[in-house]
Length: 452
Image 1: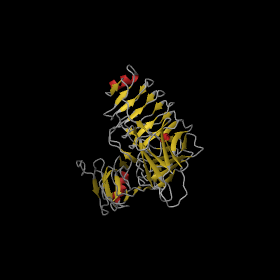
Image 2: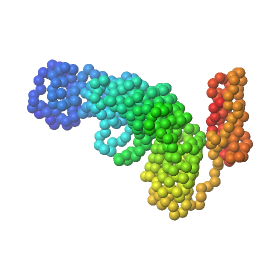
Image 3: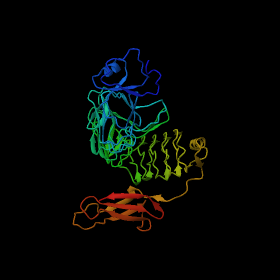
Image 4: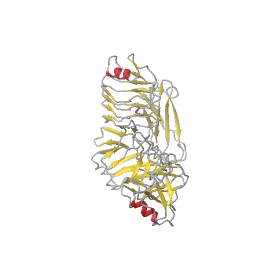
């Protein structure tokens, strides 16, 4: 009973010289025994179900309690979690920017372990911006790794791509699901190739403990395209964007927009998290024919200031405009008869404009959102991509700066340069891709970039 009352004792080191522990000896729950591999202490721990860790393992910066890696505070580039650790707690590696490689041992059975149902949710290895690889011991029964990416043991579920992964990632055939936030913050990836076998891509949703789970591609600021195998039965891609198979639901808009965008005319549904996290998005045109706006579709699009929802839309999902802090004007038609929880939460200056007596007015009042039936104020018009043309769009290199003619229209009206918009040319002298940036002025707003 030597340690029975030592409730605050988290670990004990037993030297190799100890060859017997009395059966009457009781250790407090959750204790970890450190000792030599192959020693009596190890066999004792195994016999009585006590966590055992090799005393020679480098555990610098690791806080381990009850076999759970609670937190890593070290500065090493290569971290090898010792065998004996059975779980990695949610957020254990938050803000570990020095870490480039993490090795997960055979013993780990649970990554993202929580303490209590209300434990705060945190993305896997959040803040490890330079993490290039996750390596898993081949004998681990719960997890596996390939090319530095973390998968379930049978490699059917992609769990986490390290934040420092660069360039093109080709998901191996056989993977059938992509976990929520699996690529979140992978700011150096430029292309992700999705195979035929993928049947499920987790999207923005609100769980039973009140946590928003966001798009798996949020924070991928360099991502130019998602390429889906042509014979995939559930998903498709076009111009780098992710759709459902028949391309009626836009699942992720790419590349990350800056300025204003037009949603393609074939889209009938704006999917969950389709634009989430796009802080530089300032304006968007939703085509007639779109019937629903999904959960978190515009989550944290803080550059949005005003938006008109067309008459074809009947439903707006949970958290659809959550934390769009710059949004001041949203016109919603009386066709909308369903709005999800928290659709406009975190929009402190928002006024919803709609018809008196409509469902929208009732929702706004019940959720303490300012409502007006007077009609949205007439503001500046937004210049969008379809308003701008350049000619020519291709040159033969001769070492001279090129300045193609720019035409900007508002319907059939040709706008005036200097009065309605300004033009800036970038990288237009050297060989390669150049840009022309058109920015609204006067009665017009928005920015459009064209390549030539």
